[in-house]
Length: 169
Image (cartoon, rainbow, N blue to C red; front, side):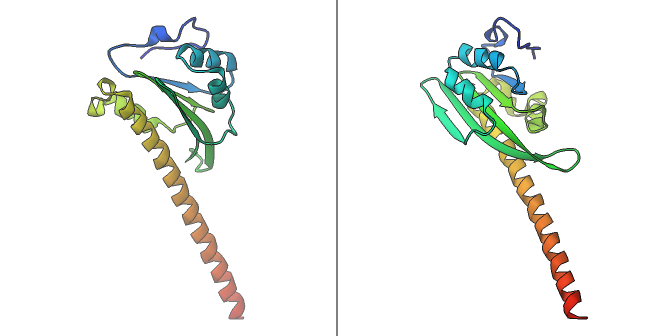
């Protein structure tokens, strides 16, 4: 693990050629550094613009040696409030870079998988890490939908109880 600063002259100097490298960029406020990082890993300024635009539609851009996935997710925070999150994932060779709007817990399970060396994840292809990240995003979406569904059922039950009470009067 390296402490990468947005002011670093080069981001590629932190890449270990012998394993999968995952960089997590939290916050989309330093557009110059994000653009520089995207350019350094062979992507275009328009890709940086997509990453920096939280209202962007979901898309996958596939190039010869790179892929950019732009999507939106949701999760429940510590106060059990639903939060939406703009997420972009850049995959190039043995490097995966995730960009999120905030420092959120979306990828916590992936961090744990890397720390515990689950499935020797760092020594496998970047595709496996991408699969873990996408699985985490989907699991958060499913959890959000389930909680919303539970809340709607509770509201429906309350409304039916109120209607039943009114007809019995």
